[in-house]
Each structure stands twice: as structure tokens, then as C-alpha cells.
Length: 507
Image: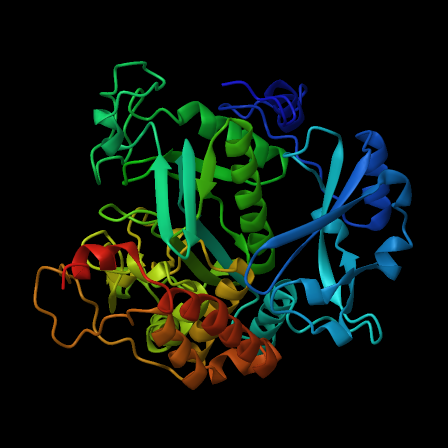
């Protein structure tokens, strides 16, 4: 595969691994430079011969936006005075009569942009009001910062740790469209079972045999796993950007489903990381003539993509979720945390699984967690306690309902607030369900709601827990629900679906 746009992979390797790096017995230590102050950023930019500075921020629904300036505009005053933009042109932000907004770059986020061919410095920004200079209530990154602050104020813990697993599909081509008399989508994938009967040119010419069957893609080796080298390049670009990657592999679904796992980190930092993770993966795919999606369920009949969120609370370096005598090594605090998550799951899903497509994933039969229960190891429960290690530091809660269409800042914050509510109010999660919740009868176990419309209704009724500490505001929640109903729920509800022709054309 030839890369014609991005920084050459050889140069990436030189940046990631210091030539004089200390040998730790396994590999060279990654050479990751961090900035703390505006002065650090200026020195770093000069050292790396930066030509362009790129400023990024996140909208309410989770999409990254950016603009760029030549390097000579970067100075220490800019970090204090900020940069203006039109908030009315960003989804669910401002009305046109109050459109002016301002961005303040965060110097701790400065990195070399791994998706650009010219030397570009990337900086994540916080959004503020230009008149009062107050942080903007609809800035997802500000919401996440308030969630971390509220956790400290409760005295429960000083840190929450997050380890999301954002799955995705890499396709060779995608076409879709909707017109008055026409609606379609078509996926091309050299890794798809359905391609084996086609005669078009592929990476193996006429030999189309090396493909994973439906639900049989997990941990397959090359040549079935044809994206091994592509993933390796992607993780080197991530490491260049300071992302600590733990493992990468093919996932369950046919058609190019992949997973790259990241080392856990604090809430705001992990929100930044997921935004950068998506950005690097999409750009690496495009550079190789491919396309990548984080849609929860891009195709019928195979597994969808989740974003299972591993989480734990810490204080003074101690994992508060651990108790050697508790169920699956869980402390009482951890069980109350789970109680809060389960109680608020119908409302949480509006933020953690926030698209109409999310509810095509949350159905039985595809390892999707549709049962509102908790268990050790059992993947059919909404909450799972992984049992890979007996180490006290490894004990954690895995919430399996979220998917990668979620805004990570809002999703992590909402889960944390649900867990805090469980701890403060001692919400009992009930007994664990260590059975196959799909195969065995569990009459008392509720299933998650089945549509985006349903969970938006639940969020409307149950969001007091999100208002704790002023983390979320009524205005943000109202804007979020209103946008989703008008632009997503109604958009699908009002349109004829092709499958309706199959079912009803000859009535």
C-alpha cells in the first residue's frame, strides 16, 4: 500500500522511537514530548520546524471541527486572548443573533498532527463566551472537566479511569444515497464473506477465498486478516501523537471490523484521546484508498461496533473498586456504582448510544448487551466485571452498552454521574446474573429500550443525576434532545425504507 498524503511512516517511526531510547528489554521507549505552558508550545514548534498550527474543538454531538493558521500567528498572547469563530454554524450551538464564540487553546494538548503531510501542530481548544469569557455550557470538553471537578468535591475519589474500546469497520468502498425515487447503500470490502462470489479484481486477483465468515473474524491471522499492516501503521501514528496503545486485532464481524485498545486514562484526557483516535484512523484509511466508519451497525446479519467502557475510581493511588472478599473482587462502592449505572441506563443510552443506528446493534444474538443486569465475564449483561487478572489494580466495571457514535466527553461524564448517584444513594444493583441471559429464562431482568426515540423520552424524564454539580445543564440537555428528535428520529421516521418494498409492495 502506498501512502501519498500523510507523513511517511519511516519518519513517524523516528519520531515515535528515540534513536537513543532506553532499551527496556522489550522495545525502545516511545519518545513522547509533552507541553505544559504556552512557552513550551512555542519552543516545541520551533524545535520541530512547524509551519502550520491547527486548532480543534468538539461540537455537542461529538464531531471534531478545526481551522488553521500559519505558525507566525502563534504567540503567548493568543493563549490568553483566544480565537473567534461563528457558533451559529456549529450543530446545536448558538443562534445567528448570538453567534460569536471564542476558543482558548490548551497547551497541554499540543502535538505534531500525524494526519498532515506538512509540519502541523495540533492543539485542542476550550470554548468560551466572547463577552464574559466564561466557559461555554455546551462545550463537551467543559462538561467533562466539570465532571472531574464534581467527583473531587464529593470526596468519593480523586480520579476516575477510563478504558474505552471503540470498534470500527474498514471498507474498500462505500456508496449511499437517498432521493425521492431512490434509496440505497453498497459496501465493498475485500474482507467480506459476501464478496467471495464476485469476480471483480481484488488483492488476490481471482482468488477470493481468504475471508472470515459471518461472526468469524475474531483474532484471525493473515491472509484472512489483511489489515494487519494497516493497523500497525495506524498505531504508530497514534503513538506519535502520544496515544498509549495496548493491542490491536481483527474483530468478530466479517467485512473488516477492527479494534485497537488503548491504555486507560483520566476522563478529559481520554475524551481528547478518542477524538484523536478517530481522526487518525479515518485519515489513515483514506490515505490507503479505504474508508472507515464508527457506525454502530453498518450492515445487517453480523456483529455491530460497540465502545465498551472500562471504568474505575481511585483515591491516593488506590483502586476503590477492589475488595478481595466481594463478588468478583468488587467493593461495596463498586456495586453501588453499578446500581447507579443500571438504574439510569434507559436515560444514559440517549447519550451513550445516541443514534437511530445504535438500536440496530442493541439486539439479541450479536454479543450485544441488551439485558439490564451485571455479571462477571458474561457478555450478555449491560455491565460486566472482566476477570482477566487478579490484581487489585485491574478490577474495574465494564459498561457494554455505549457505542462509538457517542460524544466521548458527554458519555464518560454521564456514566460517571450515574455511578456517583449510585454511590451517594447506595443503589443496590441486585444479584449478579451469571447465566446466559439470552438462552435461560430471566423474567425479572429488563431489556434496554429499543429505539432512539424511547431513550430520548427516558432522558427527558430522568436527568436530575446529570445536573449534579452543575455538570450538565438543562439548556444542554434540551438542545441535545431537540436536535436528535428533529434531525435524526424524524429524518428516519418520515422516510420510506427499501425493506418496506420487500414486505409491502404486493399488498
